[in-house]
Image (tube, rainbow, N blue to C red; front, side, top):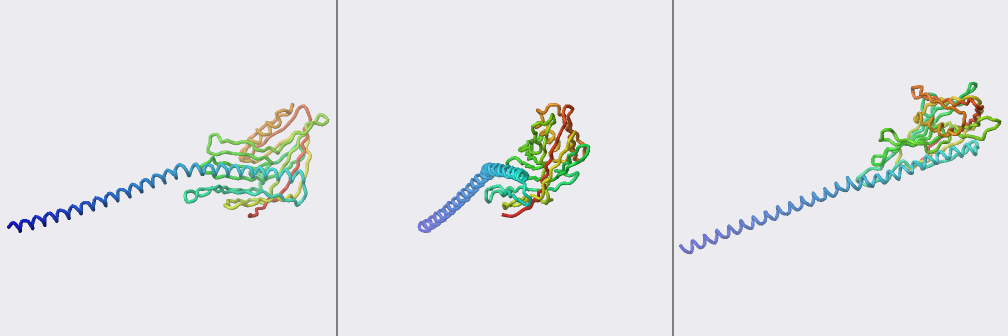
Amino acid sequence: MLTREKELTEETIGEDQTDMRGVRYEEDGVASAVGAILAILIFIFLLSLFVTSYVPAEMTSYEEQYSSALTNEIMQFSSSMNLLSLNYQQGETMSVTFDLQSGYVPLFSSPTTGELSLSSSSNGSAGYIAISNSRSTVTAGGVLTVLTNNRYFVDEALIYELSNTYYEQYGSSPLINSTLAFNLLQINPPTNGSINLSMNLVNMMGGPLSISSQSPFSLTTTALSKETYQLNGNITLTYSSIIGSELYDSLQEKMANLKGVTLSYYNEGNGNDRISIGSSSAQLSLSITVLTVMVDVNGS
């Protein structure tokens, strides 16, 4: 009997040890699973921190650099128009390279791609202007617009229109805008008591076109013709423009020191504006130069 009880006791102890080993094995498995889950959670946290903090900051920097580069490029375009007019030779060409793509963080963000558009404007559409006195009218048209389409940095528009270059910043109320370069009107020394003004107009052909490319491309302008006109007496500017009354503000600032000259602004509706320039003390003499160019796009 003692021997039998001893065997039963040893079997029981053996079974208990086996059960204990099983419990230890299950505890090790749970610890491993918890560790793996914690590691995944830490990885997700770090990844989330990277995506929500580093990526926006880096993309903001990339878009700021890209916007600055586009500003330089449209200013180069404006300068090329001035050079083609000053040193006019029929058939002469100038090119400006535009890059509409920003840098980006691979795998986590896509590059920002802007849009460039050209409108060969006619009466009633943006970029059109008619300058007249009581006897004759001189017209020109065309507007070049670059939209940055920024997602992290401020969204901007750069506009070359009516021989001027404008900047607009979206997302603010009221809209932030400014004149980067004003080349429409020049004030010349007076002669024989008259007020001498000159205007440079660029008539752009080749539109409408719209480009949104991730590869750099060249915008090539070819001088087709250059014509000059002389208008005397009170002057009326009738124009359609996406910058609206800002043209009047620029003219008013430019002519602030001219004594006896009056400017009046009228919004005629339907996108049309009118500015009247007159003088009660002296004769107004306006010389107008119209440069007509063909705008083409070449990949690079």
